[in-house]
Amino acid sequence: MTNTKKKNGNKRKLLGAVGMLTVSAAMLVSSTFAWFSMNKDVTATSMSVTAKSDATFLMIKQGIADADTVQAGKKISDNAVTASAELYPTAHEFTPSGSVGITAIEAEDTAVATDYKDWYYRYSSSPDSATDTMTDKTKVPIANNGEYILINEFSLAVADGSNELSSLRVKSCTINVPTGAEDAVRVLVAGANGSQEFAATTAADISASSTVLQTANVTSTDSSTVKIYVYWDGNDEGVYTNNIAKLQGTSVEVTFTGNVVPTT
Image 1 (tube, one colour):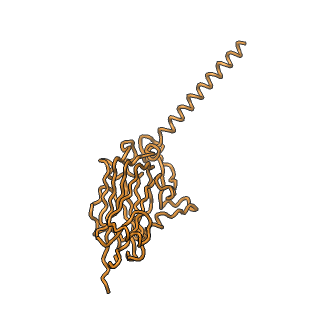
Image 2 (cartoon, rainbow, N blue to C red):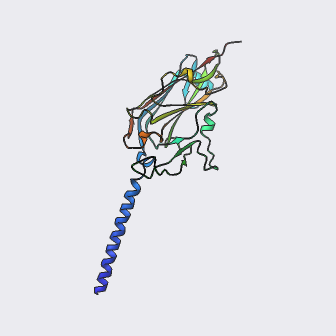
Image 3 (cartoon, rainbow, N blue to C red):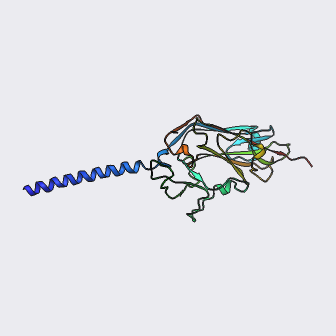
């Protein structure tokens, strides 16, 4: 009887120790994700993304639309509002340039697992340093719109009777975010043949240095598509901590421009 009591007592002690170990392991696991998990579900409340043209003859419409629909709207500014977007931090290895357009940005070459030129996430196993003991990169499918990246599409066309527009590019990109998040929030604007990335610290008017987004002219018969990607840059030091939890009333405004093609 005494031996049975001792065995039962030892079992209870062992179970208690295992339970404590399990709790400790769970606490350890939940406290060692600095780059990725500590900042999951970062909320952008009432975020608005506005696309504008700098000329009355360049029409724009939110979403994918044909040229007739774009012109019928007679808008030189259109807005997409997201009431609430919860985004995980992400990053990419491609460099926006004249050769990186929408198709290249959204390519999903899952057959090559080591190719992370498009979007990925990772995290640190050290709670004290987000750059130590980094895990391998894991690809993020572009289809996960609204989980890692907020994607807004806009269609452009020139008004009937107007000259075509060449060298479509960004004239200005204005990003309003809370103090301290200026470099954490990124905006990537892309057309068919080129793209350019912006942060809140980017100069408002960048016409002189802007990238051509589309090599073909913007016309009245065919609409041109541009996409505006909004995301949290996982490589920014502000995302390594819990200092930035929400982006209340964040707004992005992108103005497009181009060169009027003379009538021949």
